[in-house]
Length: 396
Image 1 (cartoon, rainbow, N blue to C red):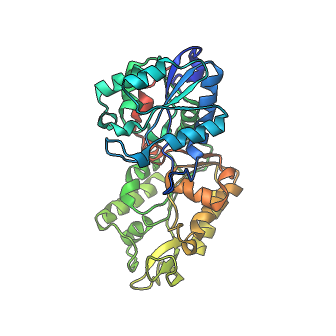
Image 2 (image 1 turned 180 degrees about the vertical axis):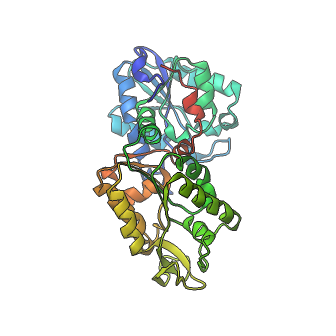
Image 3 (image 1 turned 135 degrees about the horizontal axis):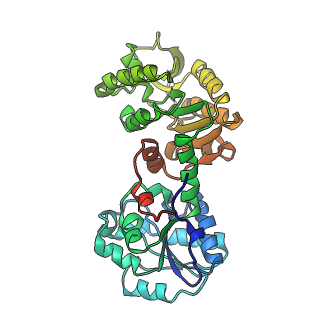
């Protein structure tokens, strides 16, 4: 249950509203936006604030400019795209703090939009510096956070400003994210299945440990599966194995068995002679893995087994691809999981990052219940961690 105040709980008429959004969008070499998903995701909150007569000050980061201005990380392209989507001008500030920016914010009229320049052009942003937070807070009367993708960071624009502008409330995107993710962890329709993939076990360990107490079935794929399989004694050629995590993988499998959680591992693979898109490849099982080769995707038997589990699920959380889906020859397993979810009646929650990219590339993203806009934030939420950008918001 989402227990934080939202934009609907405050009077916005004539107020300057500092809204932290996540416009960290991909740009090509010419500075053009190649995917505006994150901007589109913020539109319901932005439109609501403007319809209520708010005077909107938008803040975001883009890229990793290391605390100094860099032209290629300017938010000007995002401001232009937002203006096109809104059908109204968006004023682009020369910076995010300072006298000129303060004057622009003070001069806003009801329904106008000011886009601040990249907050990470200042080292005070990532350091959550008190003075930098104070300068940002001076631009507005009300704080709204709608940047789920950065909610796990205690930065000035996500946590520091919220301390100074109370009430600090959630936007519709954060509300939606936490309703879906929160329900999955606290009251899921069952069977509750988690699909975890990606390269490394170490990246997903806290999530696995937390989910073992909540899920009915855990499906493991991607590079991380090979550490688990090595713990079971299989020879896996040159597949990615985290040697230092083998014992822990063994203990996690024992813990799953103790809790009555079905933990499934790949039984066959698409193995390749090299890590290349056009590498020679063939199907093999755990028992006949070719020496010197590496597993780059789950095989057809595993696809069929995992798909059967997903077909009967009530809730599915998916975080991490099943293989190197960037290479077409090794995308079959990942796309099969996406297809199984699209065809399932389960509540399907995709945990951002590579999983979201894979769902989009598969052409099935529209058929998922919810695709998170925050890879790191959703993973930390699944780990059971508090997210500083959420915790600081005002309770209802």
